[in-house]
Each structure stands twice: as C-alpha cells, then as structure tokens.
Length: 477
Image (cartoon, rainbow, N blue to C red; front, side):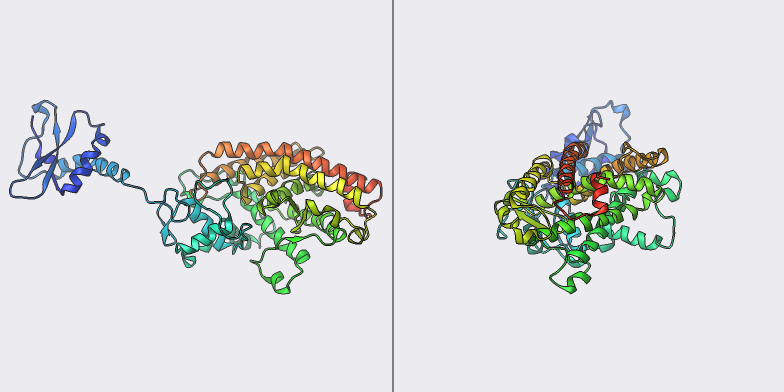
C-alpha cells in the first residue's frame, strides 16, 4: 500500500482523536480511510489518507504538494472536520434547557426563547404570573403553555440584554413603518398593484427577511384595534390612554349593563373599522363589506373571547374574559346579575345566568380548550380570524369580491407556512399545526350561531335597549 504525502497534514493528538472518530463522514470517498503515522523527531502526528486503489492510480510522490493537488483533497478534510464539529456537545438554552442555536442577546438561547424575548421587548409586553412567580419554564415542563411572566423573568435573570434587541426587525414594527411610508398613497394594498404582489417571498430570501403581505396587514390592524379599545375601556389613568405600550388589564365585572353596552354597541363599530381599514379589502364595494361584516362579527367574537380567556388563565380559574378585558367568574354569576347591576336591561337574574354562563362554557369546550392544547399564539389567533373574514363562500357577495377573497385566503395560507418556517418561530410540523387551526373553524361557527340565537332572544323579548346596528347583526331586520 502506498501513502500519498499529498494528503498529509500535521495535527495535534486531540485533533487526531477527533478526526478518527468521524472517519465515517468521509465514507463517500470509496477505498479511502484515515491513517495516523508518527513524525520523526516531533511530538506531532500525521493524519493521512491511505488508498487501497492500485498503485498506478496513486499520485507520484513529491517533496511538496502542488496547489492543484492539495486543493483536490480539501473537500475530504473539510468534510471530516465538519462532521467532527457536528459531533461536539451542543450547548443548552439558558432559559428552557433546549438545544441552543447560538448566542442571542448575550446568552446561549434557543430560537424560541430568543424570539420570545425580542418580541416582549419590542412590544413592551407586561405579563402577570397567576401562580406566584414560581412556574417551571423548562422545555419538558408539564403542560404545553409556558408562563410568559416567569419565562421573561428568567430571560432577564440569565442576563439577556434588552439593549441588543433590534426593534425594526419585529414584524409588527416593520409593517407599521411600511404603512406610514405608504400612507400618502390613496390606493395602497395588495390589489393596488399587479397580482405578483400576492406571491410568497422567494425561497432564496433569508428566513428572517420573510414578508407576509396579508398576515402582516391583519396583525397591524388588530394592533390598531386594541389601541382604540383603550380609548373606550381604559378608566384607571389618563396617562395609560396615551401610553402606546400600555395594555388593558383584566377587571372583574361590576356593571353588567355597561359591559353589554360596550360589547354590543362599541365592539361592532370597532369591528367595522377593523374591516374597512384593511387595505386589501379597499376594492370591495360597500354592500359586500356589509355582508362580510355581518358574516364575520360574531365569529370574530367566538375566536377572540375563548383565546383571551385561555391566555389569561381563565380555563383554570373558571372565568370568562371579554374583549373589553372584563371577566366573569362562573361561581359568582348570581352576584353579577343582581338587579342593581343590570340597570337598563329588562333581564332577571335567573334568565341571565341560564343564558350567558352555559354559552361561555360552550365556547370553552368547542374552541378554548383546543387553543390551549395546541398552545396557540396571538399571531395564529389573528390568522384564524382572518381566515373567517376572507371567506369566498360567504353568501350574497359579488363574484369580483369572491375572487379577491379567494386570493387573499390563498396568500394567507402561504403567509402562515412562511411564518412557521421562520427560524424565530421554531415549529417542527407546520402542516399539522395549520391543519389544527383550520379544524377550529367548525367550533367557532357553532358558537357564533349559538351567540346569534341568544341575541335574537334578547331582542325579541325586548330584554335589551334597541339598537339598529345590533338588529342588523342578529338578522332581526
């Protein structure tokens, strides 16, 4: 057997052991294997590739390898080194203990925890722990929902640097900037341009550079919706109304009549603005927008309220959260529905309890528990709402509007898949997760139908004040 000095390179004893342990990585070079030989008068060893090929195929022995021959062996050595690197122990995430993807904001962290920290800082999120601040946030902690408050607390405890967060990288922040930049255009939106604007990002683009044309718009409009809710529902401080980072805090129900006014008069009007301000729907005629609104408004409520209830810990605490951030504890139902609390409503306590509490529990069983089981994110909740809004099968709309809605829904599916493939999201099986979101639609529609029936009963028996918009929503006129 002949050994070609063209493939010989000096290395330390530690490197020898490492390369020998990864010899399988170069098995795609038939007939070659690694051999270690001592160098005379040296403490180093020589790593060489010994060939079992016939001598005639072996390169001639020379004192110094030529550049071309040495470069031909580079892939072999590089492959071995790469394989050796992959066999080294992977650092663990300092927060949850999963495999780290590198140094993020100054500490070893996985993609999920680094994305969570970044979005929390960018959006100035404030979390409240419901268990005294002692929740486990490890990757194998019981339950699929990690406590956000304790998770963020641990991010800070291990030394994640807030100042290292790049605010413009956040999808919502980026889209807000784009909206402001395009605000001078009266015909903004996907359909102000040609259809190629509906195509998904190029697969050659960096993952962090993904742009979601339809999903981003809905996320941004939902952010604006919550800002407008503060104008109506924030009562604890004028400063909080002006603070763009402040989020409404949960408050237990005290005035049922006022709460119903907010939910049945203010919320539908905010939903109208949510739809009409969406730039992708700007080409739809007003009559089709009205039809979409009437089809969507109760389903939006049937998505948002179960999600808010679960996200605030309401499933475990047996309470129900509403969009105005008012919650009802089931065990205290009699307290909420006493006559002084009902005020202008012609509704007795017994009827109210029988009408509302089973409806809330019905929504949790149909929708909320499934959201909890999949650990649904706010982005997914917004996407589910958008799937229900962009419904091309909605009866009573024109064919051009159906075509627009079909394109929007198709693009929304693509946006969701791209969102899942983003390295910051860290979803192992995006197709299954998307399927689980779609399966929620039937439960949402069933609860929306139940809500419509309850509202019709309230109006038929004149149990709530008259409101023309309310009557149109429930289909009385």
